[in-house]
Image (cartoon, rainbow, N blue to C red):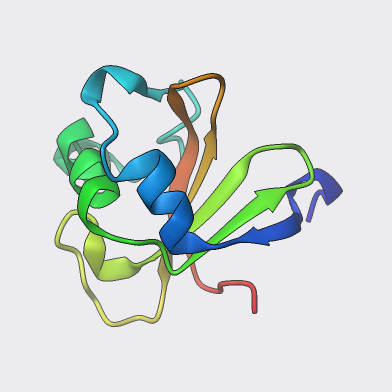
Length: 116
């Protein structure tokens, strides 16, 4: 793992959700070219920004951490996005940047482990 990607500090997930995600408007949510690069073609076809907004509005992350590089990493249970619950024990890992008031999704993918 790249050292800058390590979690330097855990954040209170519910406080983070309430402060930054629960009322996030569509105009403040941005994807980068890198955001979906780990998605399969089928996942890209099914994914929408509304899916991500729905997730941010209604689900508190299982874990939120501030990475050494200044980005935040959010972990969600696998079944909360795109109605895709395969009971594999995987998680959605979402890395975001919070410049000023917007939320930039740096990358979004399934991870098989969540930090303890």
